[in-house]
Amino acid sequence: MGVEKVATGPAGYDPPSLSLGLASTFSGFSTAAHNATTLAFTTPPLGNFLEWMVPYEKDRMQMTLANFPIAFALVFLPLLVLGILVRRQHTVTIRRALMPIAMTLIMRGTCAYRWLPLWDRRTNYQLTLTGYLLVLKAVEWGWVLKGRRRLDEIAPGVPKDEKLRAKIAAEGPVAQAYRALKDFWDLFVNWRGLGWDFGSGSGLKLPALYKDEKNRSKWLARTVQDIFARYIWSPDLPYVPRLILGTAIHIAFAESIMQLGSLVYDVNSLFCVGILRQDPTRWPPLFGNYWKSTSFGDYWSTKWHQVLRQSFLILGGFPGGFLFGVLGMVLGTFFASGLLHSWAFYGSGGHMDPAVMWSFTAQALGLICERAYYKITGKRVNGWVGRVCVIAGVFLGGQHCTDGWAKQGIAGTLVIPPQYSPTINIVWPAIKNVAVNVGLL
Image (cartoon, rainbow, N blue to C red; front, top):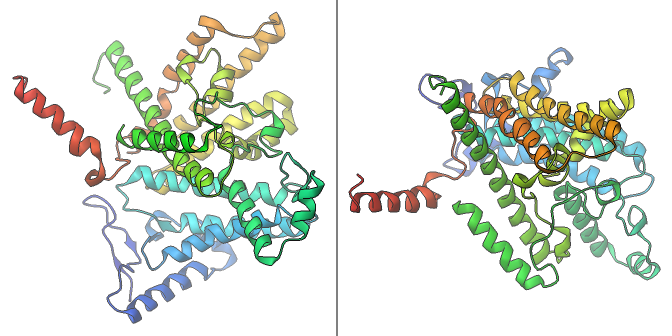
């Protein structure tokens, strides 16, 4: 099957890409898979290596059933290898040797494909951002000196409890493989590090628990309830109306991010607690009551999710702290956040937006000012003064970020396909019927 043009966006946008589609015969599908494999693994001369790893938009391949296994393998298998090795002692040399290979393969798997039609910009943006974050996860697992240790272990894979240690030593190959995969999955999905040395063991702050964590059945039932609840759920204006409208859009967009993230988190927690039998306390809420934040520190360290904390520390926080101390760590962490959130526009056919990058970086200034206030007065920012500062910095100052997303089509795309959306198919028609019956329409 040859190369042909595939419609990947609105009218007028028709870049060349590899059309593999659904093969009508097994031989046709095999040919498509072979072509996809060749394109995925055939590397160009060294001078074009970066272009091979991160192709131009016009050179990206449309994701299809034929090449999806290749893209999945490029991203997942290197992480699987590093994730298993990071749970073994004395593997730092081989992990660091494999790390650049893993980074290259993950970047190729992330950037060589156009995951969904280009007009689904939000999903493409999120998938690309996830790919970049997985590259950082490969860096973390490859570079960490002593591997990743649970808090109840004296070394990776070596429990403090002697009886449990003896039980693990007596396990057969199948049980050992299952334990290795189970540990890998916990590390892969547990980005906040609950129960691990890099999370709970390094000052992680989390929202208060609100489910019945002591009763597994009630906890699972409440999680299912939350999943269904989350699933259902202009320059021409004068300055003041524009500010009000912009704030409403900004908050609504942030809320949509929170609900979508919490939906994915709840589905994953349902699997880990219900099937893998993890303790429900390992899955506290993803977000806190952010509208009750009394300082920048309270908002960013407790109320907002901490899923990407370790990734941003690796990319910017730790290097900034090494060079410039605490202030460098704070600035570097938020700069890394802005850089990745801006760079991910590549996946939706857009371009890096300085407004998005600097909106995230500017949040560090609020934390630095709060630290300076504490150094001078000995008191922490709190109360209504802190709330006003958060509103000004996050809800008003952060609108440049939402504006940047909106201009590149991220804010206006649908998260749930229209045919499956209860809001489009049930809620809005019901509201329209009520409005018609009462004479409003």
